[in-house]
Image (tube, rainbow, N blue to C red; front, side, top):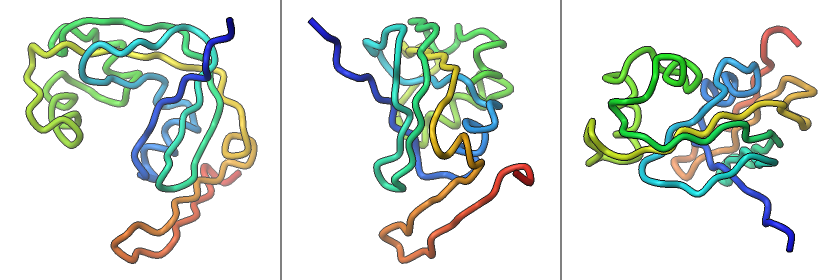
Length: 137
């Protein structure tokens, strides 16, 4: 039996996608117990048509206030307080003792990685499309 392709959805945020593509963000932290496993994963944004392939290397289940400093930094945060504030954008009622899943990824592949371009499509608010070249590539 073959496993289905795993996918991780990310927000249509240029700074976030820049950090992912430039490998400054190599993990994500999600509320609750998520059943991700080591192996291929598609990092994508269905709103902005952004997509890259990666490899899940590690999956940890713990409480939000138990996430290590290393995993915080890999996910783009400096402290548990900053993580909590960031997670409340998507999970408004999350508490410091909530269970979370930390998903570390690496080995990014795809056009966004190869070209260094982040393309964010217009939102439903009527914004203009945004195309950003990363680090002078």
